Each structure stands twice: as structure tokens, then as C-alpha cells.
Length: 189
Image (cartoon, rainbow, N blue to C red; front, side, top):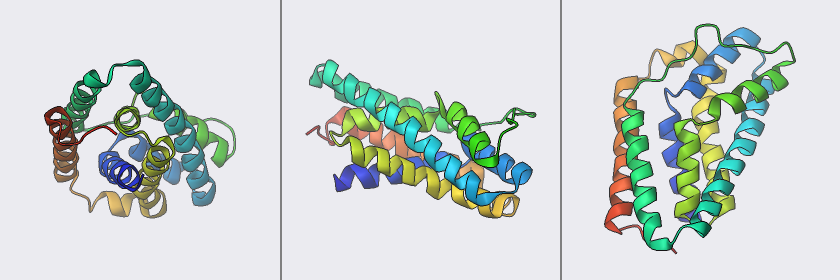
């Protein structure tokens, strides 16, 4: 359980840096200027989205023979690693809803996270570990660790992070997890 939680937290926290949902956090903070409801919206959206993603991962793991899981999870991590090398962008005029800061953030963040690499990583992590709660809590914490600074210090922080090095670090971490899974170094319970 501890391994699933910490692996999920670290992997997603690093992968989220420079991701489109982190860019959305910057935009929401700049436009709405209400950090507490924005943070609450990010938390609830992530918790719901990653609970759904982890449930799909756990379901897939129960449906697919275990000897194929290492290959699928390994390939998924390698795919996320390659994806991490591509800088994310956010639409110039991302739609914001005419609701309060919490509801606007909840909806925008939930929708932006659909099909995102951190969501797909959550599916793979849940398929990898038989610890649904630990994966969901870990990925949610990782998202909060990456997005809270974006909301609180916004642009000042964005200018200080070397996004290229961060993308390469995230890619290396995903690739390492993929290779370990394929090599059987990380065994399924």
C-alpha cells in the first residue's frame, strides 16, 4: 500500500509539471483570483476523475490475464514517457463557465484531465497495483503538489521552472517504470 501511494504521488507530481491541467491552474488563478475555491475545485475534480480512472485500471487488470498486464502497463508507462517529452499547450481562449470559482474550476479541470497523461498514468498505476485507494490518494496528492503552487504563486513560479528539464525528468521516470514493468523487476502482487 505504501509503495503504491508513494509511487503514484511522485510519478503524477512530476508528470503534472508543465501539463495542460497545470497550465489551466495558472489561467484559473489569474482570471478568477480566488485561490481557496480554485484549490477545492481542483481537489474534487482530481479525486473524482482519478477514482474513475483507477476503477477502470483495476477493472482492466481483473479482466486481462496477468501475464499480459506487465506488457500493457509497461507499454503504457513508456507511452506516457514519450508523451511527456511533448510540451503541452492550453487553448488560447479556454472556456470558463459563468459559475462561481469552485464550480468553474471543478468542471474545467475535470474535463481537461480527461484523456490526459496523468489520468492514463492513474489507469496504469491502478492496473499495476492492487491498491485502488492508495493509487487514487497518491495521484490526487501528486496533482495537488504540482497545482497548488501554480494557484498560489502563479506566473512568478512558472518563470523559474525549467520546463524542458522537468519534461525530460518526467519522461525518464515513466520510461524507467515502463522498462521495470516489462523486465518483471516490478512484480504484480
